[in-house]
Image (cartoon, rainbow, N blue to C red):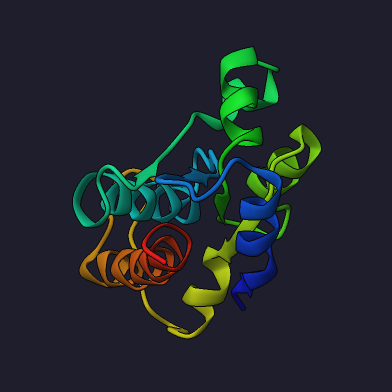
Length: 150
């Protein structure tokens, strides 16, 4: 299930100084699990290929450790979180920092739609893993379009 909060865009624009030109897309760390690799690759697909200049990312570890610059960025941009597991570390840390989550993507929900598929390993994706990356990247891209190119 994808948790879309269309109200966040409107709330964010009302609270800020006008439209934003960039959305932060923040993946979980998910080290040691294919879910985390899919999360990170989907984010890089969006920030580097599909929406460069409109989507950026920050390091979750910097947010967790309280890096001032990272926290400030999160507080001043709408965020999309991409979590590999039900712990929702990316989402929870954005919210604890005071950021607004415009979309919360849960990788495991996408993977459930492909029961029995082999997505790869923690260090390498299979063709089915790359297909999941593309599906998630498309969902993220749609939200970036809604927020930035409105």
